[in-house]
Image (cartoon, rainbow, N blue to C red):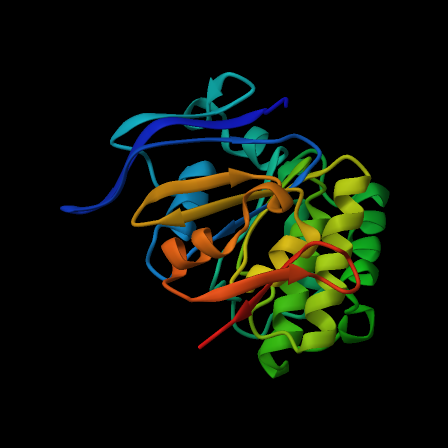
Amino acid sequence: MSARLTARDITLRYGDRTVSSGLSIDVPDAAFTAIVGPNGCGKSTLLRACVRLLRPTAGRVELDGREVGDYPAKALAKQLGFLPQDPQAPEDIKVRQLVGRGRFPYQSFLALWSKEDETAVTGAMAAAGVTDLADRSVQELSGGQRQRVWMAMVLAQQTPHLLLDEPTSFLDITHQYQLLGLLAELRDQGRTVIAVLHDINQACRYADHLIAMKDGRVVAEGDPTDIVDAELIQDVFGLPSVIVPDPVAGTPMVVPTL
């Protein structure tokens, strides 16, 4: 397994509160990695450290062997696209304008908007299913529509790595599966996807690599078929269950026995 993005023995804190200590991961290249675990276990904190929004107090997060904190901002933004859990849009911004902000790593005072930028934005809006919203104010949209617009902005960034914190939040079930299918397609095209997901069955169906976290540590990681069993679900989530094959995908499906 090759991994361009890694974390080695990192300690993550918010003030005096330690979230994770001695945490290490390797994000497989050209694969779909899902991070699962109960609320407050450190999933989002780990993603924030990977995109240097939170600096480890010990250890290193590296991209291609270089600490992410050493990259110039635009250089890192050309490699890592990040969708946070609760992004905020400026007031009165239109959808096309917001999606266009995904092109900031490629622009400068000498090279502003280009044909490549226009192509990237148009393609990203089409992929996220928001083309018909292009001239709408983001503030007017429903939560699910806004989530798809933010996804389009990240896609317009055209990075080899996509890091997504709960990307299916606010989406109805149809759009959830459409988005996960799109992420799987991007994986098949050679992109590296890492996403925090709350639905363990969706994670098992779409991800090649699963990282299960609890209390700031990795409990298990690997192919969902190899690691997901009733014992793991009980340990991580405290949920009694049986594991059966997904009737469509054949992947592990968790059925609670409460």
